Amino acid sequence: MLRRLLFALMALVGAVVAAAPAAARSEFKIAWSIYVGWMPWGFAADQGIIKKWADRYGLKIEVVQINDYIESINQYTAGAFDGCAMTNMDALTIPAVGGVDSTALIVGDFSNGNDGIVSKTASDLRALKGERINLVELSVSHYLLARALESVGLKERDVTIVNTSDADIVGLFQASREVRHIVTWNPLLAEAAALPGARKLFDSAQIPGEIIDLMVVRSEALAANPALGDALVGAWYETMAIMRRDDEIGRAARRAMAAAAGTDLAGFDAQLATTRMFWEPAEAVAFTTSPELVRTMDRVRRFAHEKGLLGGALDAVGIAFADGTVLGNPANVKLRFDPRWMRRAAEGRL
Image (cartoon, helix red, strand yellow):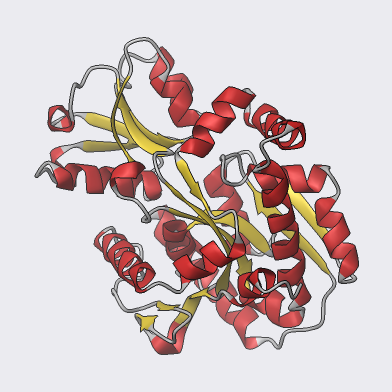
């Protein structure tokens, strides 16, 4: 109920913002949280890469780490940030439903094993029937659980969901006898799976391409200054080129990201191995313009509708794609997959 009231308030705020014309701007704030696919944002800020690209376009871009993932999205939705790292489902169910017109500026990767279900007592998914499962409710972890249960003929009603912050979930899994099964993402997933007696039952490699990691930017911010997109995309792919290098420069970059994520180089590289990174902008453009993305987002929005996250109607919010396809209400598009800036990077036009 509290979340739905928050959505209603955000929708009102979003409506007011949408009604106002975009004014020219040169200063922006971007939020990110700890996750293997988003660590490049902290590195790019620390190494001056963000500043270099911001200076190129006469901008000032502040990049801020938020310790709680959902809180980072809530702050973005409330207007504290112009951009935020988040997944495709959360982009739909929080800012889009909250009335914030957002653009998926960078499609960075999809989870290919970075999200999973870990248990201290169950040997397989069927053994979860009747059990309590801790996760960040209504997040991609919730979606992953639903897809996992579906794969063995179970329903969500066959288990009890216990909403748990990502900041607390591993500690509770380790310390509490009552917390026997969790769903989470890396680096928390790797930490939990490494605990004595823990067993991974299911992960996102079994649903490839469905949990997508994005840099989402307010569409009004891009309208106010499209160079924001150029600067962020340019900084991102410069960082991609550095971190993928198989030499000491690349290892040093990944080592720095690993330290910031609370792991070591081996641990970070292991997380990268379960992440389908789009190292090149052309790869991201191909993924973003594929008909499969439309099918994935349709599956995601139907799950969100079942959970009451779309404002009561499946078609209440519109999702727009590069080919002109719109899922939902074309008069209320609030999430846009727009590859224009990534395409400019692929063509060397930044």
